[in-house]
Every structure is written in structure tokens, then in C-alpha cells.
Length: 132
Image 1 (cartoon, rainbow, N blue to C red):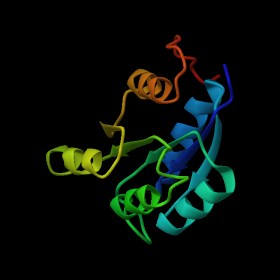
Image 2: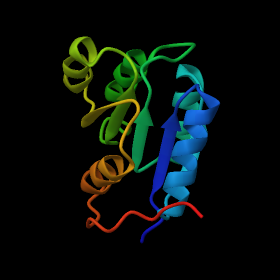
Image 3: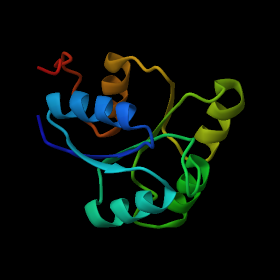
């Protein structure tokens, strides 16, 4: 596959590692941010093809990150997938209205996450590669 760049914005070390391992096994280059400030810095530096965003972040929650991305002409076109452990009833609609392309509840399903990623970056659906 194509080594598209994905920025993972997640403050939990274990969750971040889980994304990284899954995405590397499926031939994506990953970059990491742990809070709202580093999220914008990493977006500027790496210009990702897609962003995976947690809502519960220090230094600016996921909604403030979404707002800042959508306010920037260059970043507004980057598809964002929100993956959150917060109450989906209260947050899913808000995230989609704020510009997220998809919303998944933690714990996520690897196949579903990869299906959404591939759909958002225009890649064909292929079988899931499991980490070694």
C-alpha cells in the first residue's frame, strides 16, 4: 500500500502505541501528538493525510483542535476521525458538526477503523494486517 501519513493525537501512551502498531502493520507512516498544542505543531510539520483525534486531551481538548484545524485553509481539508471514550450521545453529533469525518467509540474495532481510514484517504479496502 501507499505509506500515507497519519497523525495520532492521543494522550494515553497505551492507546497511542496500539494505533501506532496497527497502522505501521498496515503500511501507514505515523506521527504522534499528546495534547492540543503539539497537535497543531505536528500537523504543520508533517502535513498528514489523515488525523485520528481523541477528545479528552490536555492543553486544549479535541473540540478545540478540530476548531483550529477547520479555521486553517490548509488543514481544513485533512480528514479527521474522532475516537473517544466520552459519551457518544453527547459528543458524536458535536464532533461531526465540528468537521470530523467519522466518530468511533473506544474501544474501537481495528477492522472498522481501517475501513474508515481507507475510505477517507481514497484507498481500496483490503484485508486487515495484524501486527507481528
